[in-house]
Image (cartoon, rainbow, N blue to C red; front, side, top):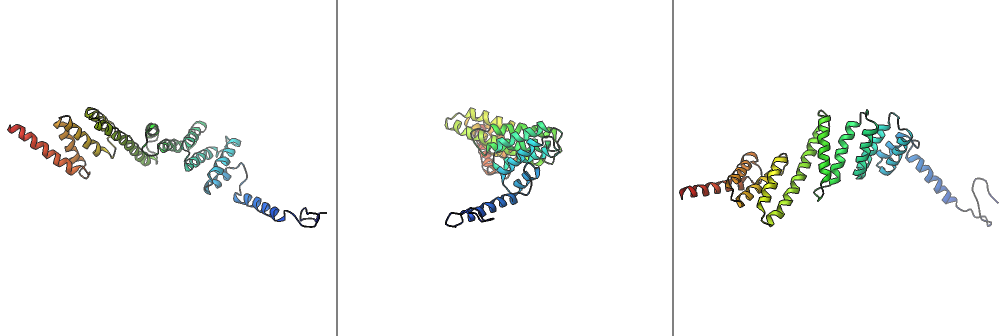
Length: 264
């Protein structure tokens, strides 16, 4: 026997599953209310992204792009998909999405932004200082390309900052490398490595460290002229660095040694 509107019951008259059914219906209603936009719509993906529901946003945007590849908002959806992957920390996937945008929607106004964000995704893959900084090399080449194509882009201040960060990554890597050379007393290797850094990474914030190490290596190699030149540059070009006072003292010491030699 069934009572209309209440659902099934046991023969003893007890109603089963009513509370469970109500909870299920409430849950379904909640799911529908959580995103008011229809499945397969661009707005659905945007809604999820705004709510911080990244996995759902990616799925919704992918659904929209797949069903509407030539729609006027398809490129925007592709860009948002890449940004969402960035939010998730999925930087390799983000880079691929930005590449797809540039390939599939070459006339979109988002191509410039996608090119920039692709470079950021390469750099983010590096993390901080790690053994493998291939991503930093790729990011540098990418940002150079961006600078050539969009020299007046509003992203350029960020590009400059990222380029400085990349340079610091490169120099930090080399400074870690020379620690091993110093332990092995391979001061010629130290000198060659640091000369390359001074030539290639002049914009790095670590240049005072490089000059100091280069001067010390020069003294080890009995090359007072190079040592003096590095100390002088430290004093004049980086007067606020932590090496300035030590460089001034080292210069005075070199001058005294030279004076003593002349006296002899």
